[in-house]
Image (cartoon, rainbow, N blue to C red; front, side):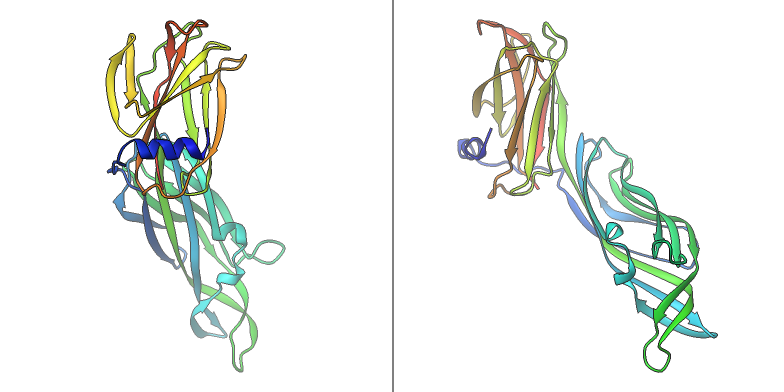
Amino acid sequence: MNRLLWTTVLAATLAAPLASAGQTWTFDVTTSGQDVTWTSPTAVDPAASVYAIKYLITKVTVDVTWMGIPFNNIDVTNQVPPEYIAATVEVNGPAPVAAMNQPIVVPPPPDPPALSAILSVGLNAGGYGYASATNVVLGTLVIDLGGIFGTQTVTLKKVRIVGQLTIHPAWYDLGYALAGSMGVPSFVGSGALAAGDPLTLTLSNAAPLAPTLFVVGLTQINVPFQGGVMVPSLNVILYVATDATGGFVLPATWPTGIPANTSIYMQCWILNPTGTAVDGASNGLRAVAQ
């Protein structure tokens, strides 16, 4: 399973666009101590089996008072711990899913907390992205007020957080598995499917040491075949043997040059030891390029 396979797949037919595209949104929330929630204006497909989720906080500003004097829109982004600024995760679907749901304290101990809250980022059941801050508590912060005021301990009155959230439905379990001698084979994928990113395909619960047809196509045909359903079009067919546990793990790298939102469909058909009859088939799997 390598770059040559994916090049062959793409050369077999024209890439087909997919409707369930990933989305990138900008969120902008402000709190004076109350809970706040942002919801994206558009949605992604809530039915994916794996999502690639990225979030990035681009700016944090505060309004404060010192000695009764207000100071507004002070940029304190550099005081936010790096682990809160950005993250990229894969989360199992379907929606709803959470990429982050944890308490945050800024600045971190042992300094007195200026801001504490539970920060949540993810995808709701309808496929809309969300970011929320709950249990918000505003305290004091040591900050440089500039000019003649210098560094002072101030009281926070308002906090604004601006950032970006990207959610990409990367993998879909299409079903149509056919039970074999060892039960129902399971086929799963992982990886964000952006150019140059690693990915892994894993087959399990199949007959051990069995020849297997690994079928890859650019369309979903769902044609009756050998008592089951052939999910992908037959653009590429490879022979892969299962190991002694009845499965395999295929590592690869997602190649460059695949248009965003292109679908690739995959399925494994397990054969008997002589390769003359089918001994089960995995579920179909759809991978969606980022």
